[in-house]
Length: 404
Ligand code: AMP
Ligand code: MG
Image (tube, rainbow, N blue to C red):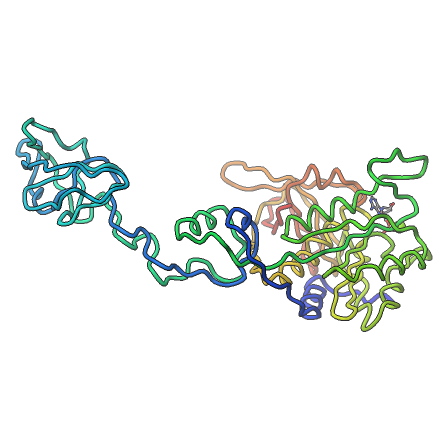
């Protein structure tokens, strides 16, 4: 029985059917890139911990410069120099200045820095300042970057390089992150051989094991390729029974309703509740199977590599992110379609497209071709979405695109 759901309903059923969450683990900061934060990170202290100069120049009291100009410079006594990485040697009193470099610690009593370009050392430690500065000018206040107690990063955040930098600034060198969901990946099909083999007539190399494990890696999971399974129910069932160590199982191929397609019946034989739906009203990737057995999710994706990839991106990726407690960051990106595209109403289409910029606008050039052609996703940078209720789009229409 093929219960065909909309893309939206299918995604909702998947996300609500699986409550399992991966546990947490602690990793050294350099290994935390792209990992999911297990708990929020708050600042233990102000950043910076002391006021700093943002220019090379002289630390002064701003009010001592008021009224200064080229023709009427304000005169200061230079009473010393702030060395980088050291506390200032002296405080600044009225009419005094300390030499300071970018990043130097502002001396007590000073509240601004005059850029060196606006000064002249006249000899005998006398400094002429020919432009006024406002209080706070050319400085960063203590805590201006991050305040003690402030939440820097929320739980579920996927750590980007800039976040790693902020954690380093706060001295957080061990980070609690979600364990990566372990994903078993199996390819089914009598025609498949491993990529390091020379295919004989009628055989093809297994693309999907590698394509899907690479995508799983890209969304923070830990994939294991369990190999190629021939098109027999016995061997498929046997392979599925050996996936106990994994948090999620992805099969590709054999998801249609043909005589050699055993995926759905094998998932049902594994246990309860079994297959929850079979078929999503979309192209490519309509024959998609989703099942749950003992709380563990099973996906049966179409064997066509592009279909398998679209199914992965629309359904498997959000689930893997949910299992890791990750908050998905997916701003909707729009582009203008370069040409007319027709689509059957009642079905959501994902057209491969190449993006380019022209006169400040993002355009999507459709790449047409069968879902079996891996080249369509290699040449494309995005999937252009034609909504379910639409019968197509016209050249110039603004459409949603998903970067791939
Ligand atoms: P199926 O979903 O098993 O009906 O397969 C649909 C198409 O995808 C067929 O042309 C298969 O040969 C092809 N196919 C299935 N699995 C893979 C795979 N792992 N790598 C490349 N092509 C595949
Ligand atoms: Mg097959």
